[in-house]
Each structure stands twice: as C-alpha cells, then as structure tokens.
Image (cartoon, rainbow, N blue to C red; front, side, top):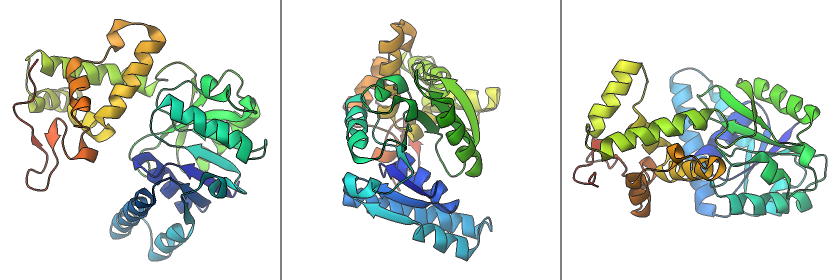
Length: 296
C-alpha cells in the first residue's frame, strides 16, 4: 500500500492522516468542507511543530509529512487510485452507510474499505457494499499521533487476508493492533462509555461535583484524566451516539444515556470542540468547571 484516502477532516480524521503521512504514505484527506480541511492542515502542522520542539522528529520529517498530504472536497477525486480508504466521518450510521455505498461504486473491488467507527457494526456497513470480505474496522484512539492502540474489528464476512493486511499496516504505523469481534461498542467503548455514563449519573444525582468525581478517579484509580474531562475531550455528542448504539444493540438499560448528557448535547455543549462541556474551555476560563448547569 502506498496511497491512503482518509474521509473526514475532524479530530480523528486529521490525526489518522497525520500518522499515515508521517509514516511515509501518500494521503488524500477528504472532506466536503474546505474550511474543515484548512483547520485539519493547521492542526497537523501545529502537532508536528510540537514534535519538532520535543526533538521527536526533525525538520525534514515535518516538511515531508505535510508534502505527503493532499486535500480534496470531492469524494470521487479523492479516492481515485488509492490502495485503502479509512472512513473517519461523524458517528452517524446513515452517513456512514451512504459513504460506503458510494465507495463501492467509486473504487475497484480490490481496495480495502476501513471504518474508524467507535461502535457501529462493521457487518452492517459491509452489507451495503460489493465487497463485504474487504470491509473492516480500524478504530484509532484519540489523540491518534500519540495513542498506540488500534482496535481491528472483523465483520461477519471480513476475510483473513483483509485482517492480516490491516494488522501489518497498523504495526508499520507504530501502533499496537488488537483483534476484536463485531459487537456494539467493540471493547474500548463497551467498557469506557458505561463508566463515563455512571460518572455523569453520579453528578446528576448530586453525589459529588465535577472536579471531585474526576479527582477521585485520577488519584484513586490511577486514571490520567477523569471521566468527565475525558468525555469533554471525546465529545459529548460522540459519547451520546455511542451509548445509543449500545443501548439499541443490547436492549440493556445500563447503556441508556443519562438525561444530563442528553440535555447537554441538545444545548450544544459538546465539550472541547464547542468550547464548553463539563468544563469551560474558553481562553478566559482555561478549563474551569461550569457552574449552575448540573441540576435534574
């Protein structure tokens, strides 16, 4: 594989593009929004500058990484001649199914189509394509350039050859691939999201405040980041979407999203990306706890 297409220029998409480009692959970064593509390149440049200052890369690597990335706002043009497509669009099943239907028509049948989905069934995605044996989950962790884990999810029809190709590729990126079967939430989010949801439930019931809950989990459980702050970094809208997928998939009330999470997403409080979630991320506040919003 030499040329990779990454669909979606958001947090995960630009991180995936960065990692592939820094590993020497040609990357076509695709998004319908030109402004999103501009922001993605700006983010990648800033992240490379941080690595340069820490002497983890040299100037030549930084420049070559940026040269390896070409942006497209047209799907057909962006996937032309690629060896692999990694979809990293919004966690919305209808959108993902449409993208994969389109990819079936726009790419040769030998091209592997991977999804960075956090929870949506790979088997369901594969069913709308003309190559279910070449559909696979490639779930990176955020922030992609730093986190080593890649969950590789087999759909019902994913071939051994496809799995082995993606496993080998993940290792070439300096990642640690872990094989996972196709169940809602896979492994990472099946365990993580109920914990985040329970932290929100604890806040919702008035057991403790935001900082107190996060401090208990950091100092008492050794977590580098508390669950409420982590939810802000993931995106509260993403957390809600994943919980809904698991609730629909398992029909188990333990996966039902807490009402506070639902209300915050409805209010546009998504966390870091919107500037406010459980914490305020504006320049003047610098991640202070938001007060007065956590009532039933």
